[in-house]
Length: 246
Image (cartoon, rainbow, N blue to C red):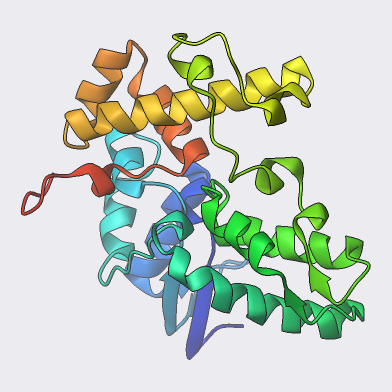
């Protein structure tokens, strides 16, 4: 279907190994073979692939074929995580409000400054897709013409609430009143999430983004560290020393 056109392969990093072999063969030979057929079909296709995974790390771990990675990465484009370009959030929010307004028939036409600031303060572990989901949800719940923090999940509505020092340092027996309104399980989860992200960020900064050394100092396996980095939206490239490549 994509002959003489472009095919976009999203989340290529999640492709099973046995399918990676077949894709590599198609890219090398410019031929495909339908299931059950004995006749190869020549194809002329431009291939674009995307992934939110660190494919170089997956290659090192043996989860992604090195030959396929080099075949796909002839020209590479790295899109910064949303947390690293919060200045784009207002334009993205306006765009999705307009899009969903027509799609779901919502009368929402904007967002109040306080709610926009909450979006800018949130770390966005799910990146732009999470923002899209949040805006659609807010528009479905909003009763007025503008989205407010009341239309957001608690984790975003409270993103501007500072973490109490006692939660991390243990040097105080006082806690912000906002935290006393949360159930213990929810408060504990948010504190642990915040601490884990801060801890890993500090270690990655100290090691210059060296995942192996960071995992050793944290006492965990590199694969586990990669999973935690993905969860918190951390990229090793963001911690490399200026002028150095690893």
